[in-house]
Length: 319
Ligand SMILES: Cc1cc2nc3c(=O)[nH]c(=O)nc-3n(C[C@H](O)[C@H](O)[C@H](O)COP(=O)(O)OP(=O)(O)OC[C@H]3O[C@@H](n4cnc5c(N)ncnc54)[C@H](O)[C@@H]3O)c2cc1C
Image (cartoon, rainbow, N blue to C red; front, side):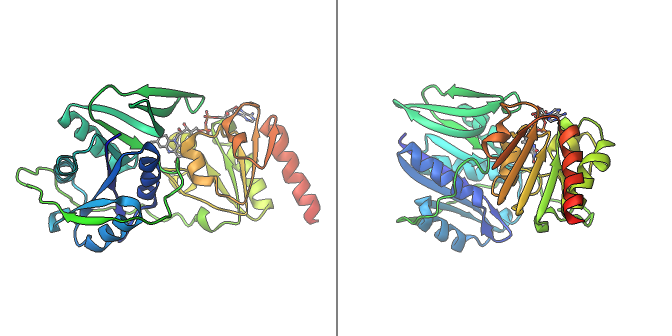
């Protein structure tokens, strides 16, 4: 690879950790790493990113970038691609990334590979890896000659923690013709559940099979252990539990002392939210479920037999 452009993302006045994960990936691809930071008053953040692996970092700093707008970001990234001479553009697979990345690729008329967990330079060809069929298969996508835009799953690489000789360069962006505009941010109402503070999280997935089984089977174990009840995304998407219970890349990231995954397959988007838990127990009837790859203790079996027995054992041990 010759030139790689990382589009860094900011949140609450800091560069997001997923942007440092892009640095790790970019460095593994080889070539020259350059970056782009977009925002209002982001000069210091850009310098910080430049010195932590971002390399030459272009800064699109304008009051118009105070809040995300797909048109404005599109223009800034296109300007960044031109200024950096990038062959490969790396964008995190976040809501912002999903929105803007395909437009960049379509506008440049180049390859687009979404939701990668890895990419490699194989003899000068860019090969991207993505999970398909709920994480059961890995697909390899080989890009042809020319530029490529990739979105990369947060949590799929370790964030780069080293340093480097970076510099910043102001990037001028023509913002004429920007049509989309920021209106407001709506915060979801608090439900009083904060999984991030729980020492124990017992989560149920699609394998629980029925919304009524959560209060009957999963919650009693969480209560017996003095913990909170979590869930995978399909459970929340089906309306079985509110979003506050969701663990994963589009839910909560939790690091409890004990995480018990019941009937959860272990898709990368779920793993991102719980893999740094201190001790992980997985209960799944499929011995090949990917969740067992991160589990400290794996139990192959029917959760409807194991979880109630475990709850009874915990209660008995507590007296
Ligand atoms: C952009 C994006 C963001 C996403 N964000 C998230 C996120 O934040 N969190 C998240 O969880 N997912 C997220 N997903 C979805 C993710 O890809 C998976 O589809 C999801 O995690 C699968 O949920 P699951 O493991 O509950 O269901 P499945 O993959 O269907 O797995 C169910 C598991 O239950 C097991 N099972 C069935 N019956 C039993 C039984 N009786 N006893 C024991 N085991 C049983 C099965 O063997 C299976 O392994 C996201 C996807 C995308 C594309």
